[in-house]
Amino acid sequence: MAKRPILITGAAGFIGAALVKELLLNGEKVIGIDNLNNYYDVNLKKSRLDNINRLTIANHATWRFEQISINDFKALSDIFESYSPRIVVNLAAQAGVRHSMKFPSDYIQSNIVGFTNLIELCKTNNIENLIYASSSSVYGGNENYPFSEKQSVDHPISLYAATKKSNELIAHTYSHLYGIPSTGLRFFTVYGPWGRPDMAPMIFAKSILSREPISIYNHGEMKRDFTYIDDVTEAIKRCCYQPATSNPNFNKNFPDPSTSFAPHRIFNIGNSNSIPLMEFIKTIEDYLEIKAIKHFMPIQPGDVISTASDNKALESWIGFKPSTSLKIGISKFIDWYKEYYDIN
Image (tube, rainbow, N blue to C red):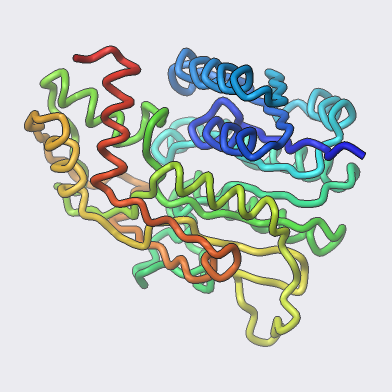
């Protein structure tokens, strides 16, 4: 019997498109869905899809794309009925901490209603494994570094973070009630080629090349665990083939938030190296050979000052942890940026 395909939501997104390529090169049949909304440049999303199509032709891979929203239960149900996926990777979400301050309903609809639609269909369609995107933002105001999955995440400081925490709770409930193996992945500041225009690398590169000021919040006193895209897709791929299991040693008197009596697991995906924002900017300046015009500003509501990932659980689970250095990652990002935007 032919192997059933993998369904990836948010397939035209930054991480989604990169994962599609990784799985196609691994010999998988992949079904991708995305609503192609205009949160950022739709042409970039379409270019990612074109890039996948070229790879598909070159490698005789099996790839199908459908433009639908996970908010549309009927359309989503039709996808499950037509393609009968065995693994589901949910990367569709309304992203952006600051955007959530202005448009909260977008986050409730996509990140909670849409996610519930998806997991309901996982319940009724014999899904072998569900992987879903959480976020390092769930750690909120926590200052116990590095962040460990065993820590409490009950104090989010943005609506975006609250919706990601909600995903973890919903997934755990369905894992318990219906036995769906579910793995939540907390991504730490993913960057690299084909990245999102609303994230720091793209914003900084564009402004520096245009000789325009860059806004640096909290007066530059911030740190992030920047994680290169290829490391992230490798980790997700390995989790696809390692479904979550219950923890036989789970102690309900002293519960471990990262595991459960249900087949549900939580993992950080970070580089285990918290980098000062000013060092990150300098690395971009060095590869562009242009000094940034810096505009220092106060911290914005919803922002966290620092992130740092403890990756021991991930490495133990899949035998892999992100390790791409910032210099290598930024050099590849800048090379792509100049080529994509035709900058000499």
